[in-house]
Image 1 (cartoon, one colour):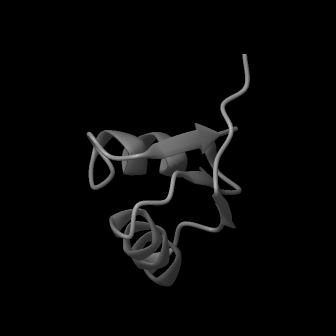
Image 2 (cartoon, one colour):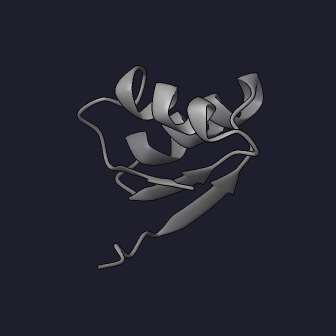
Length: 57
């Protein structure tokens, strides 16, 4: 089942991660995607843990 999000972001380099965290901190559910799946998994397990993020592969 797919999960609906308010905001989608492609690219989890330094600026992408910080932008995603900034948007989520304002109450939006954020979908994140990156060229490498491991970067998405690391972000979801690390800095995004317990927050409103959906990792997309």
